[in-house]
Image (tube, rainbow, N blue to C red; front, side, top):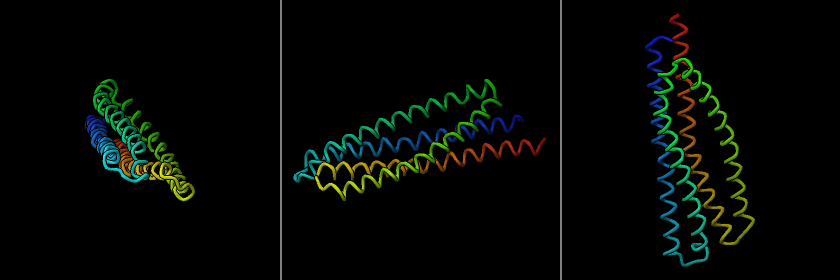
Length: 177
């Protein structure tokens, strides 16, 4: 790789990781929403169904908070690590990013097959089991899974574009040779 392309690889990687940091904060935002909803159901819930939402929304809020904090931390660390890895071996950094982005794209394929199946199962539970607790669990689960699809859908699009841009940099370099 030539010098300009290697700098572009680092800039591209850092820009992608910073976009991921921003995106993962939405998990935290939605987590806070679910936690507030749980408190609201606890304080204001008068019906059995409203009371049944207290624990499921609390659990979903905690899960989304864990996901958000964990992925946010991991991506912040990744931004720091990119420069170190790049400065150690530019070519190895480029190759590892190609491999990592390909692997991540494959993981998203599994997510986008599994999550809709889980949504269908939760929806069927709403139809089949008519107790307030199971309704609350199912509806809250569907809500959480939709949040995951929303955020991961954008992350998937970003990683695909990042991967294409990485490949394009390699193609430009091959043409220059």
